[in-house]
Image (cartoon, rainbow, N blue to C red; front, side, top):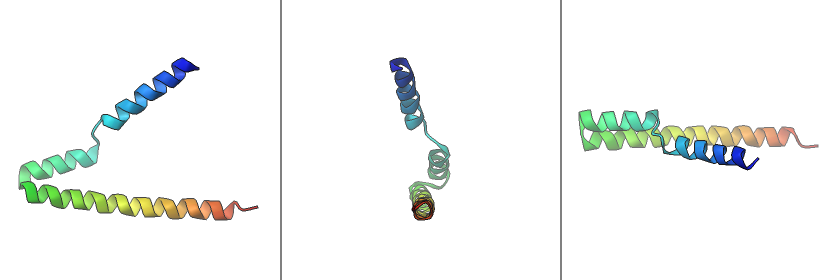
Length: 69
């Protein structure tokens, strides 16, 4: 059990520090278009994440409401 927890924590830490596609797009944009393009890309990524967060929150709220006894 403890070894399973250790493996889980190690894998979780590894996945948390690996840069994802958002990071790759932002770095590419900054290298090709400069600082301003990088900042615009960051704002776009943040806006997209905000939409996903709101959609997820709405879905979870609908599930909780539908599962009421």
